Length: 378
Ligand SMILES: Nc1ncnc2c1ncn2[C@@H]1O[C@H](COP(=O)(O)OP(=O)(O)OP(=O)(O)O)[C@@H](O)[C@H]1O
Image 1: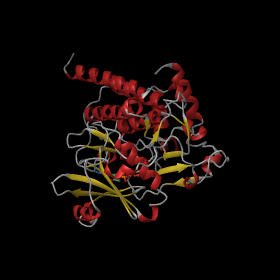
Image 2: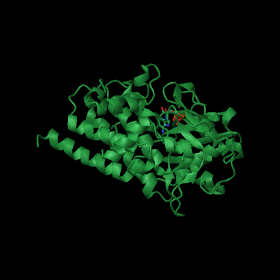
Image 3: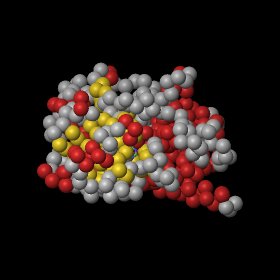
Image 4: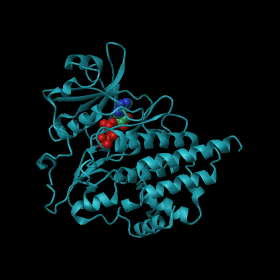
């Protein structure tokens, strides 16, 4: 890491934003409920300063969101009636439940043509409040196609039911794999490939999608894995369209995201840019390398905030103490340090010090080259 980056990080960790969140945001935390015990709940923070409405229901239509198109129910390749959905999910059978998030419940479903899909069903009690989130997810997903992003297949909006049909990604979440829930733990090479996949998915959103998209909820439970351990970024419920076309550098908006992954500058200023995703990616990269969640509440105070703990160890020359003990193979010190360096740069407190997602992908790719050369004994 270059010196300025380190200086900024040091300042931040002496007085970390995790602890010194501006009072106005802390006073007005609107929590997007998460029933998942495994993942950190996504939250929505809103200013009470008067500049930004406190309630999501009072937010005026913003130019950053697409308007609801009447043809929306024709998007995607899968068009289902509620009766077909009921059949495909065996009446939303608990046995087909894949998981639960702030938006509702996700089911595995088998279509009549044999195709397996995932169906996200908005919870009834939240369906009105979450309607805009639902629309946001639909409209954004409909416009993207990339192998590292979960693909939207269809959508149903009938009466009180709101359902999103996406490709089914069969191998659980990244967090589950770091927890060893699926048997063997991820080895270093898998972690490196997964990091590259995530970086590529985010680069597409930031730089190559029809409109710039900021995900806003990059975290390990939103990364789904395929049978071949390729990663796909999921859950666009919080995604926002960026404002790069009009030449603006940021979008002014309520703070949404998940505690521990949230960009401190965005939390402080309400200014959202793709660099907020870069910050979350930095936190996620530390999680991938160490296996630890961004906030480990049961640990001693100096180890609670993983990135701060990791940065301290790294600066004390103890980088190799950070290797996830679940990784059984010997991890090359140089390669590991390069990855840590990159994660700290991404999680720099000031966004100007963070690289953009495209160069993060390129740097991970260069690390991969080095890693492969080492494996060949070059
Ligand atoms: N396309 C999919 N294929 C397979 N499993 C999925 C798919 N989408 C979601 N899941 C499963 O359902 C769970 C819940 O997903 P969901 O996106 O609703 O919530 P979350 O991201 O875990 O939480 P939150 O919405 O609060 O951030 C995921 O953790 C995952 O296990």
